[in-house]
Length: 149
Ligand SMILES: [Zn+2]
Ligand SMILES: [Zn+2]
Image 1 (cartoon, rainbow, N blue to C red):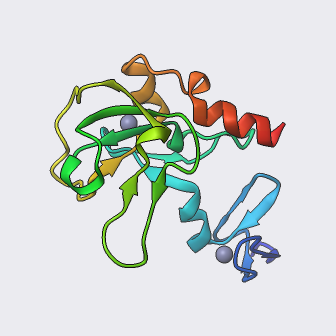
Image 2 (image 1 turned 45 degrees about the vertical axis):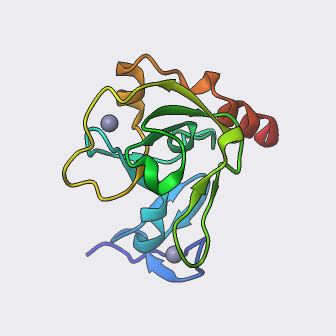
């Protein structure tokens, strides 16, 4: 029997057994539930990817894919996120994208996956690369790098 190793989740304060669940990320422990917040589903290939790289720089919020333009404002396509915040989420009703915080790069090169229920999505690093997108050149990445140092 392995020795139990109780640690405290940096996000919610819950104590959990690190040998059994959760994850160690960015020099902190994350319980099973909170560690889900560290990942996102790619809207193209449906793989799960960390929202940030090991340096704490964004992977998810560098590019924005708009499927349903009616829901969010900007027309369908792939956008560079040039600055944060780029999205306002009201407590009631639908959210909106700030047009000045995104830059249109291309029209949508793939159809919205049938399982995908959201009006917008994000790309994993693989899919970014396959589309010729470089997250380190985006405004969002540079902005975070400036803050993170
Ligand atoms: Zn937690
Ligand atoms: Zn992908």
